[in-house]
Image 1 (cartoon, rainbow, N blue to C red):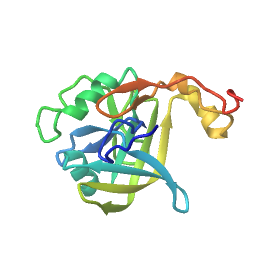
Image 2: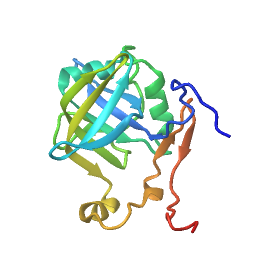
Image 3: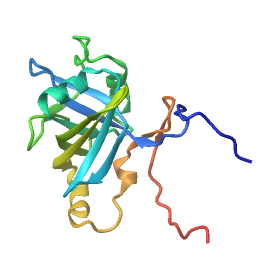
Image 4: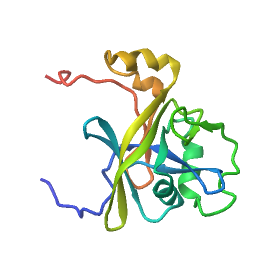
Length: 187
């Protein structure tokens, strides 16, 4: 028997986590933790990123028109969780021990330890009641060298168990992802 739930529950909303990187007005890097990221086609493959509430990251994306989306891994989770829980408006937020450099195509900060990074240029934004959607052109994808050949040639599945992405399931619960399964396995 099935029962109905309120649509406001976050009990089931699995998403990979990304830290979005922007620069503050003074040039200081700023990162926030986000999970509402997906893809669409608009003449080319694009990223859809939604940010709820008012945050410095959203302010800076609006001002700069670009940002990085850095895949969160098991190793990066403590730092990413800090980014998600400490307000960007607090001046000491970025006094952290993290290897940060610049994107290769866009003027965006990136986390060196992230194995998969999108450099994104905002093409369109859609304000919603309580959040904003950014439809972004992918201007560059930075990946660790060991994943580059498979990704370039689009040959077979990416070794997601080696990327070690963190997935959230709602309510602040995190999971690691990694075992490949076949849709024919249960037949």
